[in-house]
Figure 1 (spheres, rainbow, N blue to C red):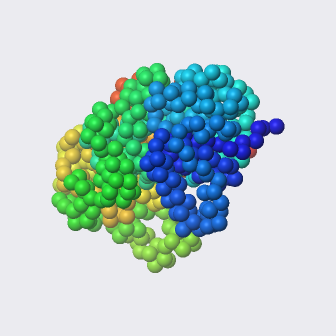
Figure 2: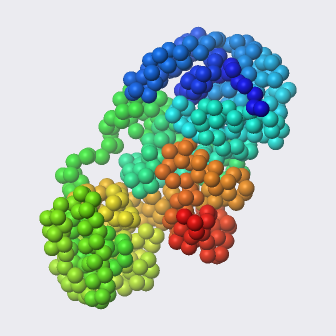
Figure 3: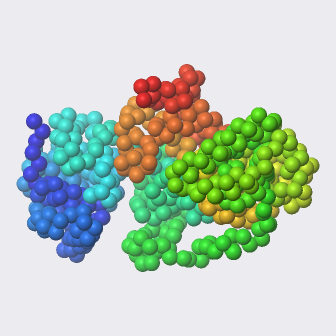
Length: 596
């Protein structure tokens, strides 16, 4: 039988602590909420009141239930108030010496059988536990912010935590309606270990002026379906908190350079730019604590006129290729009102592409997303061809042929001879250097990357890739075209992985390394990222969908270009690919899909 927790203590009533108080009180458990001083206690009380009042206003909590919840909470100054509770959860700032002092005092105050828990997200639970005479009754219970909403709890056991304590806490999590994953005491646990390497990498991208803050955030939201972009998320977490977590993970986690905080982060913290709580971080907010972003000196102009500044007029577009990507791009341009010349290798391929475009447009009509007249008009704008010579009078060419550099270079050399001066030549490559393709022509200033995401008619993002030879006019033209297509164009430099893949795949690779080290299961890691970070898919679900061979190829490209040791492909990923376990397409990857 799991022990019955009738009274719980919470130490520290910041955003996290107040949220944890609410979670317990909502579930019928009496709470002793403790702070260091009367003003801090009042701030904690106000945070709890604000949260529950918002829940009532949104219809998520009855007024009577809110009142009953508040009656279950007893506020007190000082740890002595916790002398008779069954469990204490500490939620004070991430400083080891502070937590150790609190735990030593809790050990003195609390009954011998009381479980002592820390909500730390990065510090060693073991190092905290040794400040007590009962390390076997010390455990990590890591809630995610906002605690009343987020479903995940990481239960962190040390090498001496009693199995009964672990079982009791797991049962408590179930009672609270949470999904728990139980793991050993390691820097960052699951979610932060995977999340903060990615966040730090995004800050590095911004620091090096590789892309703007808006474009980095838009790329990850629109390209990966994430609830927030990495820089906006850093502002929400707090840059000082993020710095502490990264610094601790770097020191505790084997000194992986990718967890070494980017210098800009320390500078911003020193300057008091802490994110939402200070009113300014990567973005500027209406006031401290406000979620509302307001324009500042680096906010780009939002008008289409500004986007089109210096852009060339585009009326007719040539699209070269016959695969899924080319088919989707043809549909996107035709629906947006452009005249389209589709060029494939032979009449048979043209017929196949034509049928695929018709089928897709018909689906749009059946689902009520497209009028029959608009479908017919779109089809009427497309000319089908099997010769590149028909691109002599187009204003823009989009290449979507096989991902082989030699093939693309040969094609661009031909386009250079056929196309009129001033035509923008775009490649949809997702992994090859755009400059290599550009230098196959005598007009590298007119060559740009236009990386559409699959399926092109659905995905709202396009990465606009400028090389060191791309002219401002070509970049402006590409951005203006994206806007006309109803897509969000994000501009970045010509570097392996561009924005999305460069940030996404090292995170996926880190998840494979975590599984390989037997730290956690694929299911628990997927749960952690979906429930703890709001990701639409867990890393192993996503890897199986993308294809392990595709993922390995991208990871190898990143490693070869950046030479960052942390980017070396996980051996387990290489072994699965060698074994032919490529994901859903072979019905076996990290999971067995043969019965699904």
